[in-house]
Length: 119
Image 1 (tube, rainbow, N blue to C red):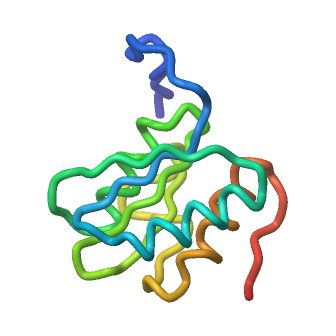
Image 2: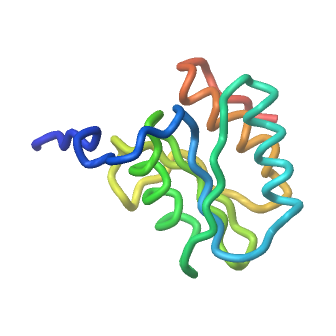
């Protein structure tokens, strides 16, 4: 399997960050995700994207992230954390909006390379 080097495709220099793509307006979920990421010291960039399921949004976000980790928030409130090197249909974590802060922590931990939290 060939590995794509996505760095050449980036035309604008963005600061390193985890990308969050949101299908709808989910202010509370975004606030909790940001809090979890920032508590672990990892920057975040939010993009409001087209409608889609959380897994598809998360994979696209991971592909767009210079840190290779992305989070997708589906229109129904589902949340997904994905890594760019995983297959598109195999996310690292999936869950509900109630777990958003924990998912923010765990996305940051994937970047840092330490074990994820279970609670």
